[in-house]
Amino acid sequence: MTKLYVGNLPFTATEDSVRTLFAAHGTVEKIALINDRDTGRPRGFGFVEMSSADAARATQALNGKDFDGRSLKISEARSASVVVVAAARAADRAATKIDSPKSATTGASQGAWVAALAEGV
Image 1 (cartoon, one colour):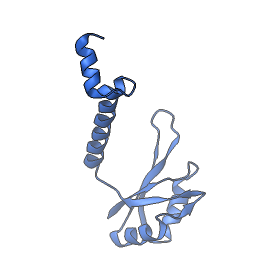
Image 2 (tube, helix red, strand yellow):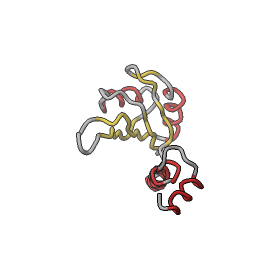
Image 3 (cartoon, helix red, strand yellow):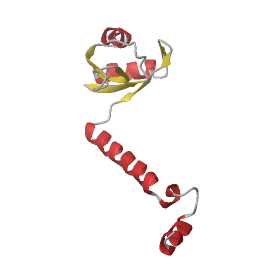
């Protein structure tokens, strides 16, 4: 069994419409479309589970294809632990950018920022 990530779904996509799209390439075992937990609105991605052979066919046939005006992004889903690590790294990068001396001033170099701080500016 292979779990596929299906990205760039139109916000109007339903489980039935996604099932119909993938069923042309094999048996769909499970579908999960992801909604925003606060608003309940679709987030534009989901997951489809199929046998490995069916998933390979579906990926090759559907990746980049237009679905209601959106170009689908299909790949094998990563495990939750990989996603958590990637999200943590992205959060660290964002925090580093926000806290970096260069962004704390208007384009001043880190050395100038440190020197200004040392002078009590």
